[in-house]
Image (cartoon, rainbow over all chains, first blue to last red; front, side, top):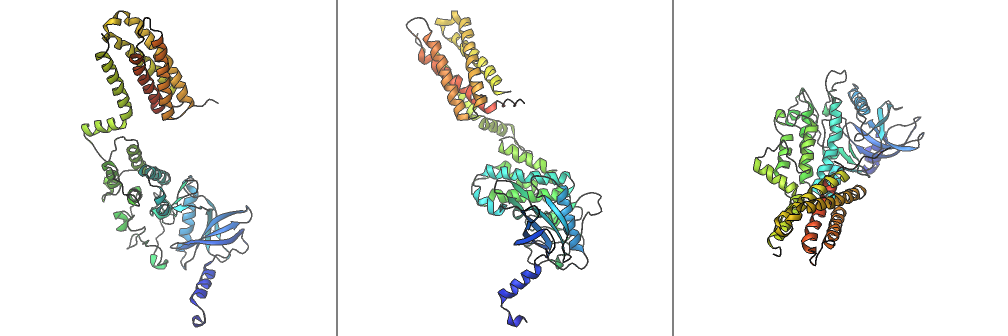
Length: 327
Length: 118
């Protein structure tokens, strides 16, 4: 049959077959937004509330229900993470074609890797980084690891809101029945943007370049320091992408501490990392870069230069008036 | 410390210090106490005005400009009140202007805004 169909016609047929069957649901298909490792994301209209939402649905064969379980776990994890920096889930269930789905707020913005070129100032980029840390710290506080933090998974909304997206590889820490659902990427879409998959028996989960060494080695006992490594890689991206200015040593030290090979050498929490970056922005000392008394004194002088200059100007004027007053 | 209070404290301290420097001028050393009291009151008034301005206008540049203007104005008034033919406008107004600038900068930079009351 393929002999009689053009490539574009075949592609259209494939897309039509992949499209979610929304018959009898409150949703109406508007557009396809993207394709991930296990599923597609569509823009759909919620006909009851008359608004557009994003619908994520599995688009790979799922004979043993692994993908279904993972998608529903993802929806549940996001649903329990109510934070302005995490896209809220509205609804979850099964479509008439039997595929699981969930709907979430439709975010129309730019990915961090696209947005970064419009932020030339280093301090603005660091403030952006601090806003990325917020939802990740929140997730950690609720026992959830993201495991796939990277610029492509950070969305900047039209009003500057920062959203951490794609919790599809997230993992609940601690005792939980839905702790981790193993994924065999051999079943996944091979085009899935260099995400490798696996834990345990040769399974790796994450994105090269942003994955911690222990994640690369398929270590099952990952903790929040794996996400801290990824945040360090994002910090590196923000301080190098489309930016040619000098990077101060304390900032480099923060990045190196976050990306340390040994997890014990990294920041213990995302808040510790964010605090160091915030201190750097405020001209204060950072824990990742111990400094001597001279360096500390010089930083104090630089930080308070206006204040010091004004006082010096006053003293100078007073001294001059005393020495040159008419006798 | 809120902006008006910081302005008052800083204005008073700098005003007193400014007055004490008169000790280095032998001609007026006898009147040191009066100069210190007058200078302290001048600093206090400047601090109140600059502090309340800082509470209303949240701008470092405008705060510094306002501080400079108030410092110069009050110092001008003090200089104009000097008895005798010499008013020492330059010697009084220059440090007065710098003191006002310091208070303007400090209230904007280090003063915390007064919390809104409901």
